[in-house]
Length: 96
Image (cartoon, rainbow, N blue to C red; front, side, top):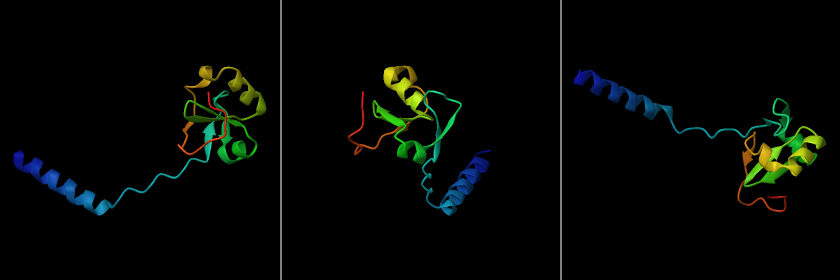
């Protein structure tokens, strides 16, 4: 039994060495609206049209101006919904 476990560990170690370094994950191009959570939002379009808001270190994207306004009125209500972590160098946007 001990010999079988040692062989499995050796095989796993050799296989891991051939796998190479992990590739970085590509950035997402879409996300769910933070207010209407079933609607998908294209991040580039929402950014271009300013349908996003920053709140407590996260960026929330919206499918339309109505959702942007709803979030503005009560961001804590939607804070658990889809968002992305803000990089530390993002400045100049609303942060609550």
